[in-house]
Image 1 (cartoon, helix red, strand yellow):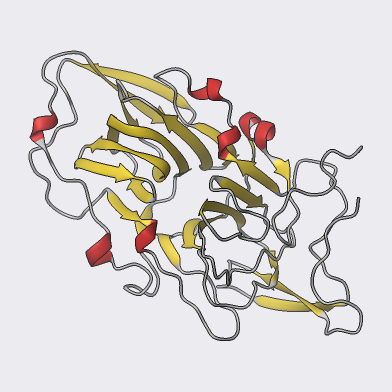
Image 2: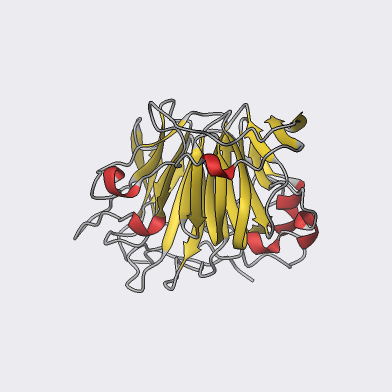
Length: 351
């Protein structure tokens, strides 16, 4: 079986490969080729694009009430994780070394934090900066989350606001509620420090707050309030939603929009992880919410057409950290071609 082909054929204009440094902020160059570069026939080794279905993470990983998120990709100071919860947590969590960006793929519940209470639902992004304590105190319908954990300092900082995301209207913060105090008893906070965990115990509920002042710390917005920017002709970079002043880890909106198909691209400095979260439109060969695609830095790719009339919702993580598969990622990750982000045709064929 041969790899899928795309792009111009014989007698058509040459294919243009775009090489970029620092995303699109550094030097750029183009390479004209007769051949279309993304297709490959097979891979030997671990440095290869993968496609994941987060629903494929084994049920056993979340069977116990104390189950914590499961990482599928890891790098220096960055992990991509999957979480599932059908009942409230009997403990709180505080990540002291990393910020956490939670995306609620499905479900709803009540999230308690140091800064107050949030009612979360499907489509919510919740930014929990490092050293913020949180727990799911109520589950209204089973929660499934995709989580980016990074030692970078993240901020909700949309480009082209308020057109892409109106921060004043659609980004909020927890509200203090002292009534959540559960009274005397034993309470546990799990301190997450890198890949290790340490539990602290208290004889009072450590989470309730009376009031908060100063800058908003925990931030929440829903993807339904994010809008893509389109152009009648030509290409356009997806708008940034989450910023990192060091440009190490950033998040972009990748929903459908008017634009030419993305260029054939050598991204020299960033791994690209795309989270497809809602249809009904197909994003190339991707049509199931909960599908995650990973293209390591330096691997030539193009990616699917984004002008999809039926509409879809997706977002993009770019990170300078070289990512690799975790054991859980190896179990569910499948080799991916980099034109339409389909499962590579060599999968299942003899090596």
